Length: 379
Image (cartoon, rainbow, N blue to C red; front, side, top):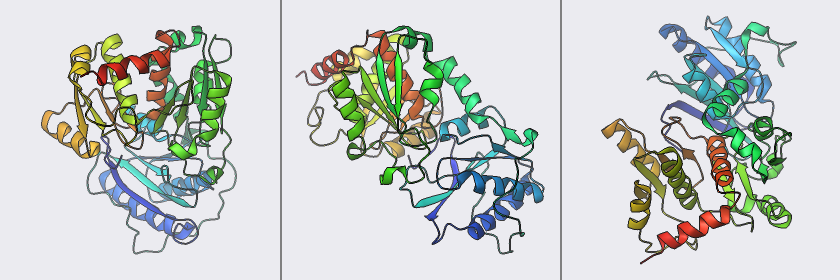
């Protein structure tokens, strides 16, 4: 999403070596350090699995501390939802992430997360201090935050993990070589009835040379594995953890609009959630494209659905007008925001709730899909 509901203060992205250089990163670090000192704000520095991300993060936290900012560094690569959650837990006032989201491998950047307005990543006019690079040794333990563990605890509190574990299912998870790798196995473990088999979990700075987003042409391996192993479902999680794709046992990738409606119906049915659901127009050629009638779906779920050409813009207006986040908002690129749980896109949480939904149905994702399609296409 281009709009964040714990908003990005600013994003800077550039091609590695051409514009994303150590000097440019440091100049922006000095600039934001001065602004944070003026406002008395602290900062968590995080990073994902992009090339040398941890080294740039270590350098930035040292630079911030030299300028007088109270700063900490993440202990390991962290998906963006985990960084957002750390801010919700008041680990720091702001966060600076070495990340280019789900862009291709030769792009990197800085993402500034802050509630404060007026902060900017534009480079300072003064030269940054000279520091040895790469940083030597390990940072002191008191300067390190285990962002992932905080996030895992939050996911356990929201999702019925035991229900998923005791249901006999096989789930393939494509981590897309991103920062969310290891989260599903860590939560579901090896002693339950459900097997979570993770692929593309290695930290590959090249992301296998495909954009690390759950796009149709990026998931051929996942679809083949799910289809040929007769698994119950597949999940693909983008490199930054904000986007998700759902795959059924036949290897069909659901359109984000259909996935959003399926998950929203489950939240209404099982968790009694009520409100608005915002989804993008279904992609051309998908089962829901065309003049589908949504009244029956609204009557069955008790939810109000809005098919928006620009879900991000519509969601912004809803928040500004009602100060109430929708039950679910989905974008065409597979980002999901679940209003009761978070004010930011979280593909990992959405994927876990999909697994909970399928577990509660006895592993029958296909039956859920077919029932919803009949309901939507009823004239």
